[in-house]
Image 1 (cartoon, rainbow, N blue to C red):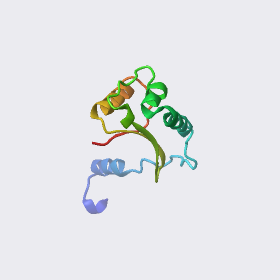
Image 2: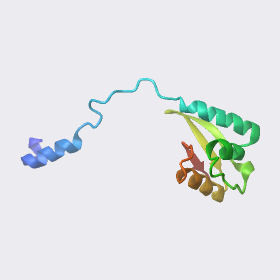
Image 3: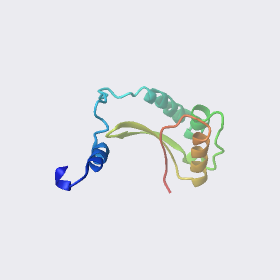
Length: 117
């Protein structure tokens, strides 16, 4: 840091800024995927009774969504480089807004929700 001609206070501030925030953290060797069992059950239910029904019964039972296009709703498991991610998918803007609103503001179970226009 001497090459930058910083005074002592600036050196301390820069050192704090560039410090490794992960230093001393424990690396997780096995990912926690227990939540996926819940989503596998929700997806199985959706395959039997439809995704809209699964959302209202399993994901958001206290505040069910009044779907405009219940047949256009899908629940899938997306496989990414980071692992499996449950996805709720709908093309209906109002359905999407209501899913997000009911889940975000009522404490319902949800991990990932995607809207495609």
